[in-house]
Image (cartoon, rainbow, N blue to C red):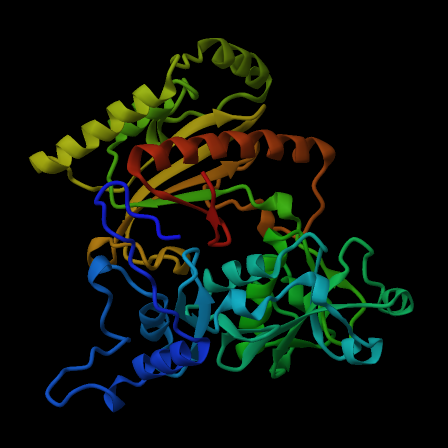
Length: 435
C-alpha cells in the first residue's frame, strides 16, 4: 500500500539502498580524491582546509598537525550516524586513543625496580593528571605511545606499574602508593663536595658521595614537583630512603594576568578581608605580646560586603578605565597584611617578561604579564623571600596549624585577584590552580 505525503499530496521519495561495499569504495575515493577528481579541479588539503559550516574551527587533524607536524598517526574510521548514514572520521593517536589507565598496570619485578628511579603515586591518580602536570613543565611533553610519557629529549616516564605483595615489602614501598612510573633518564653524576649554600639539598641527602647533574638532575627536580602536587614520592635507584615532599607545604601562590591593578585598587579589593593591609614600606613590626589582641581587633574590623563580586567588579572596571585613559603607570609595589594567628602575607606586584610554561598559550602581548605574588611570612621571619618548603626541617604542630590557616587566606587573596584581573592562578611549583 502506498501512502501519500499529507502536506504535499505527493508520494514519498524511495531511498535507494547502497551496499556497505559501495559506501566503503566511495569513502576510499573521497580519501584519495586525486584518483577520481576531474582534471583542473583543485582538491582541498585536509590538513589546511575545514568544512564550509565551520570555516574557522580547528579540526583534530589540523590541531595535531600544527603541534606535531605531519609525522603522526591519523586514520579515517568508519562510524554510523544516528540517521544510519556511514561517515569517515579522522582519529588521531592522541591521549585518549592510548587508553592509559591504572587498571591496566602490569607487575614490575623488584630486581628491575631496584635499579630505576620510581615515581610512586596513589591508585586514585589518573595518568592524565600526570600528563597535565608534565606539559606544564615541558613544552615537548606528550604521550609517545601507550604508557610512554615523553618529557624531553633523553627523559620519559613509563608505566603505570604495580608490585606484588612480596615486592612491595622488599622495596619498602608505602601501601598507599601502589602506582609506579619509571623515570627513564641517563644517569649523570658529579662528586658531592659537601659544600652547600644555605640548607643541604634533597638529593645530597639521598645520593651517597655523589650528586645528580644535567638531564638527570633536571628530570628529578621536575618529577619531585609532580610528586608534591600528587601527594606521591620518589624512590631513587639503588636507594631505600624515599623522597616524599609534603603536599601541604605548597602555600604561596601567584596570579598572572595582562591587567594591572595599582596599589589603591588592590588595597580596596583586599581591605574588606584584611583591614590592616598597607604598603610594605609603611608596615611596622608588632610586639609579640600584642599579636593576639591585634588579631581579635582585626577580626572585628573585617567588613565583608554582602556581595563580594560587587567590589571585584568595581576594581576591575576601575583598572580597565585607567588603562584606556592611559593613566596606568606600572611600577612595582608590594603590600603587607596580617594573616593567620601570628603571620603576615606579602603581596608583590610587578611586570614580568618570564611566563611560566603552564600559561605559555595565553594571548598576552609581547610575552609580558603582570605577576601578583602572594607569600607567607611566618612570625619571627622578616625576610620576604622566606619559603618554608625550602627548609628540610620538620614543622611543629603549631606551625602546621598556622600554615593551614594562612594557606586559606592566601587562596582567598589569589581568588579575588584572579577574578578582578581575569588572571590565572599558579602554585609555587608552576602548576595551574583551579579558582
